[in-house]
Length: 214
Picture 1: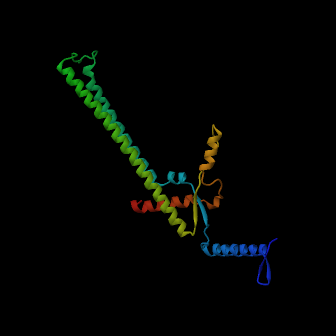
Picture 2: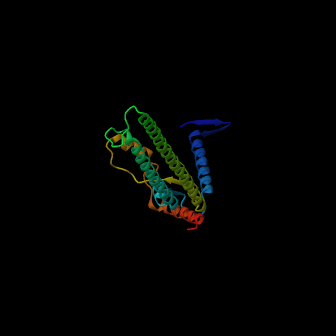
Picture 3: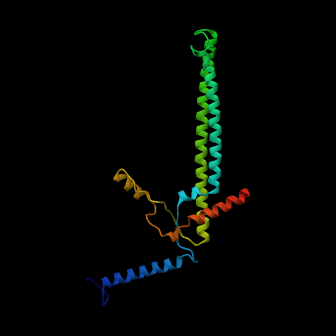
């Protein structure tokens, strides 16, 4: 036990420190109580982002659009490949319409085949990149809209913290994979009463239906 003398008074420094700590703790609790949000809603909530994206009307519409574009692209590629085979036919020595090797017709047909082959490759690469970039932009837009909807809902219901939750995975070949899974998961457990996933889905779907007149 340590003592210090101030003037003619002897003071227990241990008691001083305890009193100071109590004052700080009391002030922190008072500040926390004063900063607590008002209302009946929970202060903390969780959302399952994967579940949200699976049930959004906007995501369903974008998926259908992407599927339609992909089928159209595949049909175009199929037609171009068929055309390529027809160009290649006269260059096949076993074909009934084959050109003589080294002739002007043969050389011209080879150039035509090369040009068509390059054109097909460029066509495929361009549209594959275009669709991939479109998917990336759509995903970015969806994630931004989810964040905005969560913020809107949280503010309206006095929720001060929203955490991303997901279903755990247990089947791993290596222990390091399990460690990585635990380390990257944002919420290891949350009571079901804190889950606002369905509320966010309903909110976002209502907004989408308003904009698209559904």
